[in-house]
Length: 328
Ligand code: GDD
Image: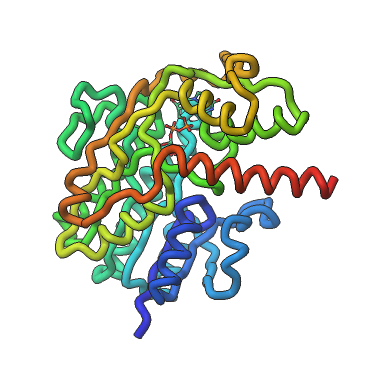
């Protein structure tokens, strides 16, 4: 019998890589997708996978729809990735962000304990939960001091996952993933924005790139490595909480320097300007994770570096942009 996996947020960056990984491991993969007014673009990241994927309409805010999907799928593993995942936008849409993340996770946990209590449950928590913690580098025991509506909502969902682990005896684990990127990254996250911005300038489609805080640092890995950690968490003998990170911290400024140089434009300072618009009302300044626990207990380690990840993004986005320019 094939194992069955259910993924919420399957059309996102991580959902698409995770679906590929699980199909390669011979799972039956089901995705829950919400109805949107833009179905033409909604599933772009998973279109190449084709009919091997089973997609069902369902929304994490609509408990009845989750019940329907759970009863239909009978999943062995549940990967709950759905969220409003943009930190700055969470200041603009705090109620929507909090509902989708906190209530959405509670709904998923309730439905799991009701209809699939045997299933192993992965919750996509986030390194944002640590905020500007003084405990550095960050591990599972570092203090969590969230500084955005997004992070506060993730912290609640993280606690709910732990509470269901104990009170309902669910095999429920939190993956505390640090930033992870790829050519499938949304273009309003900083790595993809910088890569696209530099390629647009090189292609003559733009003459400058507006960014926010250049001094922030992040611990950036590749999404492909990070979805493998998700799967490993659900294969472990016990549920738990795991930091997933590379242990290396790079500033947005150094990200720009690398990308602009790599595409042949030289000094990024000729093109990058800072704009109020992209500053956050409360910034998380620095993130660097210590993934010793995942390395030890899950035998996980990253295979991509900051540079190889960006090189791939430059190559793939570059091809995509020149194909689009030709189509024009
Ligand atoms: N998006 C964006 N746009 N970020 C910018 C910009 C800009 O124009 N200019 C500077 N930055 C800075 C942000 O202020 C932040 O410090 C850093 O670049 C990274 O921003 P994002 O790429 O938007 O990611 P994030 O760190 O806020 O959040 C991502 O990682 C989290 C895990 O740590 C998201 O993927 C979250 O969903 C995830 O939980």
